[in-house]
Amino acid sequence: MRFPSKEQIAALRERYPRGTRVELLGMDDPQAPPKGTMGEILRVDDAGQLLVRWETGSSLSLIPGVDSFRIMQKGGRS
Image (tube, rainbow, N blue to C red):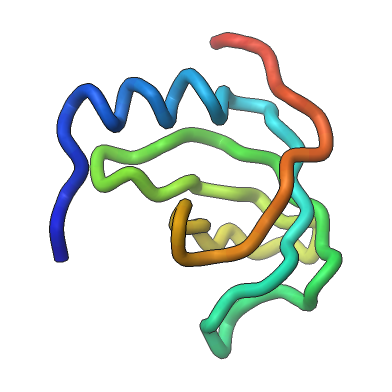
């Protein structure tokens, strides 16, 4: 696994701030919520994964460029 640079992490944190609402379009994971599930980004970790609190109650992370999702509403800064 190749980890993103500090600059790439900073760009991800800018693009996906805390509170951003996303819709899951697809994820290759048996633990994944159903397609169409809405979630809220809690943070971007140091590996570049998006920690999401899903409306189903789970908190499975998204991997940009691997998992399929779309931004529904941009979050604010915190």
